[in-house]
Image 1 (tube, rainbow, N blue to C red):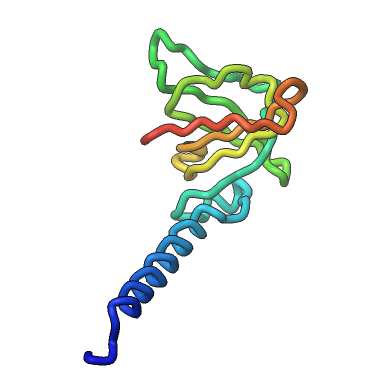
Image 2: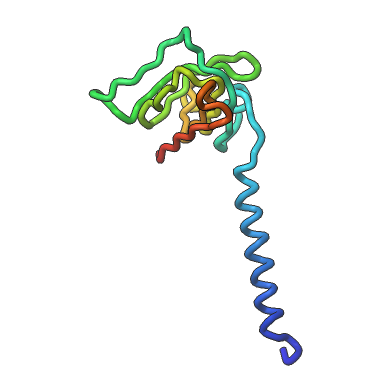
Length: 133
């Protein structure tokens, strides 16, 4: 150990820390899935789709302010009920695109995160909602 200097040890620790940081960040850079793929996944997935405006949205803050359900149609055209254990986001109905992160449970997609892309005055601005379940 005579030949090893402090700078070498510090450099090695920094390299290991950088590798750990990159690996943890890469877990969040997953590609989008469909509801059909989500049914077969044991891990949370991201599903991108559009709000089904002709289907019922349920939010009753007097009964449960942390329960909001709605329907999303994914890229393959499959429609699924999404449950968000959080408040209904403002201007939700105006969203052009929705990305939900979560898992399938009992035929419904339970979302832990929701990201909306809104039109017009919010052009190129994304609104994010995160719930802790």
